[in-house]
Length: 186
Image (cartoon, rainbow, N blue to C red):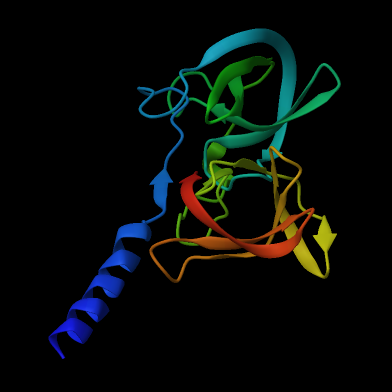
């Protein structure tokens, strides 16, 4: 009886050791770079920002056009003139484009960030794979495609937030399976 109880407790304890909460990260382009790549401006162009970002719903994130290319997301300082936007490659790569704007932007009509409902800008999976949001519209097997990962993996369907460790479906060359999320970047 004692051995059985010890075995059950050891088995239950092993689940808690391996299960980890998904870490929620707020990307701060103008603040102190804590556990994110520091911002490095690699180029500067003139352009315009025309709508809220399609890849992350937060009040300071924009979709911009400059030099014939769409940048999304681009971030505008919450203070100051609102005439420049910074467009980072990802939360883990600091290389960014700075867009100089001809007129000030107004964030007041943007949807505020709600981490309980918004899809993150980027995900880091337990496997170490890094994935970024894609424009809406892609579908696989009637499920919306939300992310493209480094190794051509796509993440699709709905982000499961019911447990402390989030999950999402992934499609790889081997088929569709569940991926566990280590970090969610908003």
